[in-house]
Length: 270
Image (cartoon, rainbow, N blue to C red; front, top):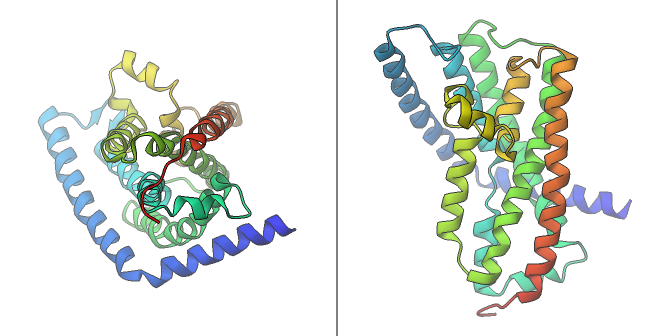
């Protein structure tokens, strides 16, 4: 019960903090509108130049629905663990985190939970409703929505563990700006968040399917849109199984790396 109260308190604090900085959320939403406008005109030009309505099995509207929903999921899943840890090491604040009566990894995960709740309500749900309204119900509604929520939680855990595999590098370098930029680029590209995996060359796509990045964006979206065989239980379970397997593997790897890296901690300042 004490552990439940702790994580509930962290979630509540995160919700309050997110609501306190409403302007930041509004700016993020405005920036996303600009990004989506650019994506629209870019892919419109790609399809127009191709001279066909279907490219790699996806129509223009299929592609736009996928990328719009991927952008809203990105806002929901986005974490700044690497930046936060780097600043905490440089200021010496990391010591205070390590002294808290909760393991650092668990504290970090639940400290972001409140913002995830708010961003899901303020970004994904409105985006989903707009897509449904504009496309007149192109996204199927049914058991796939429940499976999508489960998949999204698994994607959140996977994304957190990827962050926690990169963040401890700060303990060695004290700065991870370049490393984090590379990490974000790789995740967004190989997960299907910027380019649907259907557009990848077949050989490269098969390699990407064995990597954890696909489990962050492509699998949840495939489940929601009933693509890649996820329209049946037989096709759904393997996708969720891939996510669960990566959750376990990355959690173990992240714990091992963190336990080794924290022994080398040095701080500057207070």
